[in-house]
Amino acid sequence: MSMSLEEFAERCRAALLADQGPGGREAVCRLVQEALKDRDFVAAQLPDGAPERKVLYEDPELGFAIVGHVYQGAKASQPHDHGSTWAIYGQAAGETLMTDWIAVTRPEAGKPGQVRRSRDYTLRPGDAHLYHPGDVHSPRRDGPTRLLRVEGVNTDRIERFPYEVEA
Image (cartoon, rainbow, N blue to C red; front, side):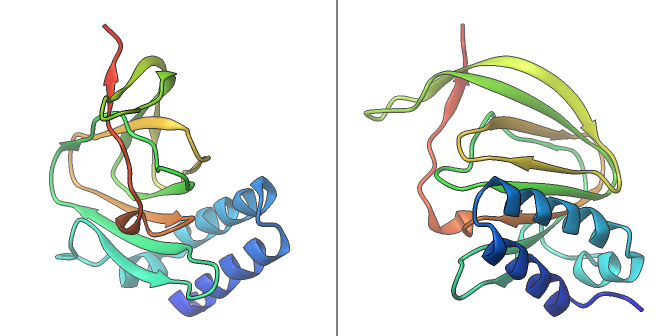
């Protein structure tokens, strides 16, 4: 039987209540990997024609958000972090080339932070990757992709600052 969004959210909630630190985030990352194996769950949460970003669930107590991303074509993002929170990217379809960056300087006083490339890797269907607070990365998608993301806090509600590649 397919997992429902409500069941997935409740399992994430239980993991985060048990451990609100890195261990709880790792447990949620494993739950994302499990959800990505459920074809009916993926089809229901990331359907054709869905927007590039849709908040599917936001926990009223803990504040974490489950977000669906459906990209129709190529798209790339500049290096970024998730402000004061964490995020888990779960690749449901297509591939995302991800670059991790080392923050040389953090953004301050209206100036972007500076980063240096650390490594590149590819997220493929079924992969999930946890980005802790302060981790800087940049995704590139060369074709249609679908992702299931869990954010520690809905990133629409927090301030985030830009980064530039070190000259």
